[in-house]
Length: 430
Image 1 (tube, helix red, strand yellow):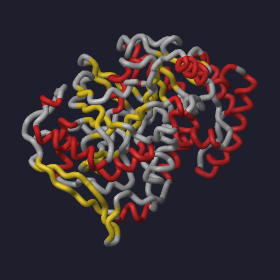
Image 2 (cartoon, rainbow, N blue to C red):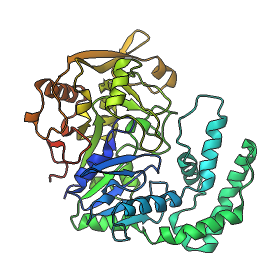
Image 3 (cartoon, rainbow, N blue to C red):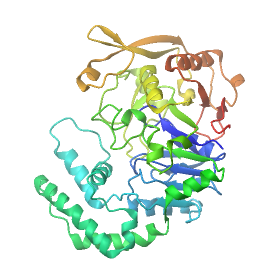
Image 4 (spheres, rainbow, N blue to C red):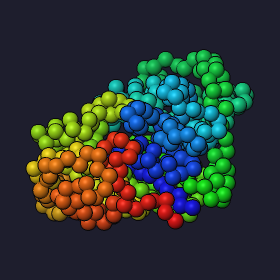
């Protein structure tokens, strides 16, 4: 059976939550493979709104296994809070419906403190971090000083792991003017939360490979967007993990040959939260209108998103680096009523035309967009569930997007509601 990876193909906030939830009806397992609780997903199901930031979007569906893979960094206190919130909305969450990889690194309170202290004291350009400790937790993972889920099961191991981490963190904290960490209090906090995390701990790599061999369909869910990838994003204004599709394999322990289809989620225009380059950004009435119509505020941070026209250059680039087989084009209805639409088809840099975004930050900042204009449409596309429901101009817009990004549309979303989706190609088709 086919296994599908879902990745955001812009700067995040593309509508992954709805698409993953919609696809999860066809899946047996939904696996989150990177990021932390810094990425929000909003699902609207039968009028009920679910806000997720750590748990896989498939958790709201009964009869599915949701998995948090080792590529994620996990805040155990946030995990418990999010589980309690969803249970309050009637969602059943048990060790049979949720598993967490034993080798998943934990986000500790010291990570959030370090994150916020750095951002507040940074005299240079701010990165725009959410301050939730994701970056410092990934630093500890690479530095081989993480406390991982499995460590919570053994007191002696936990103490050794904490001591190793504090050698590093207390030196950093001294340089930032922060007090040394209370070791015993931190260990006590971890021991207290441990039982609520360990009940979900499992050898996820083994479970996923067994599911694959049994012919089960696995849906791999990414967070953020490919333009925030630590290697291929607009560095340094990026997240702290690999976001592109290849991370689905290393972030869960399943081989790359097990991935059959990569679906890139793409908004019909472009948005970005926080700092960093944004060539197609609009600081005018059109940008304001996109933000208002699209309700462009971050699920986790509440920060207003910067808005701009669709940037085909960037999406073509992310489709290449993630090996995208088809895109899910979302929020088409936000473009309803614009008399004229624009698409960024290239950049001008120092008098030369480019068909990609350069890596160098100073060059990115100097890139100016080259726009192509298209006629808009006055009719509503909201709630459309077939091509026949769309205005001719909207179909032309979609087809032009396909041409410019060199990738077909597999799904088209016309509202936040789960069923307001036009299926062109089923990613799970064998």
